[in-house]
Amino acid sequence: MPGTSLVAPDLANVAGAIRARGGRLGEVIHLLAETGSTNDDAKAGARAGAPHGAVWIAERQTRGRGRQGRAWVSPAGESLLFSVLLRVSCAPARVPPLSLVCGLAVRDALARVLGERDAGRALVKWPNDVVVRDRAGAGWRKVAGVLVESALVGAKVEHVVVGIGVNVHTREFPEELAAIATSVAREAASPPDRAELLADVLASLERDVEQVAHRGLGAVHGRLAAHDALAGRAVESDDGGVAGTACGIDPDGRLLVRRADGVLDKVASGEVRLRVA
Image (cartoon, rainbow, N blue to C red; front, side):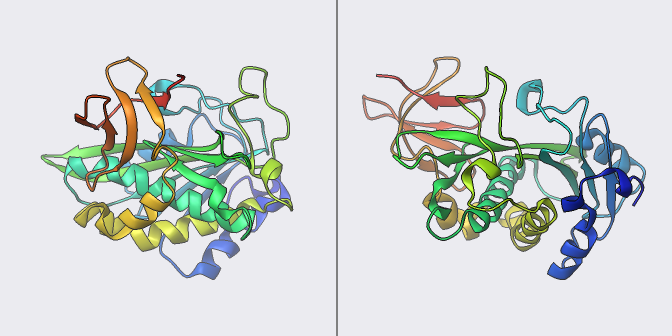
């Protein structure tokens, strides 16, 4: 793996940690000290014939991004930044559920790091974030984000690139993020190992992603419902078009919001936030 000597020790054994899980995802690894965007690297790799499960990992991204083109802040060595190429042939309608199952994989990996007492604080926030609830249960802070990009051949998805960024070792955040972001290191009792965290995420994806791509969220819907950050909360969309009480995620990956007049909205895309009374 080129650049292995330029990454921190907790990523140096990433290949061994992945092999220990015995799956196909991560059999090919590109470990980089710096890149523009691991998602861009993965898309270029897909066009060049890279295999299903190839992974691109970087200590630092200079053009990292989240949904809607937002920049992802990633000081070198503090985050887990990676993209995985999934060669799954499915209908375009399956892509939003894939984003949710990827968030669930990250949540499950974080729960193992947090330990039994705090595992339930790790939650999936529709449509693509992973958050950690504060111990009082009043709110949460974002710890990870997922960006899913797909390529079509005819009416079918030919491949999907899943980009994941996890705040792992960060202790201090810029002022504009301090109230809304956290890290695994700030929430866990002991320092996390990024190689083990990545291997756990890939193992969860190995178990669930193809089933969701071909059959939808049915098999994981119960787990998703159990860790839904928005369930029962008053929410509103960023554009003001939807406001009400979030009441779950349907099998197609849409957020269900019950308005004050009883009408049930099914939100397929966009962003929502907690509504302030």
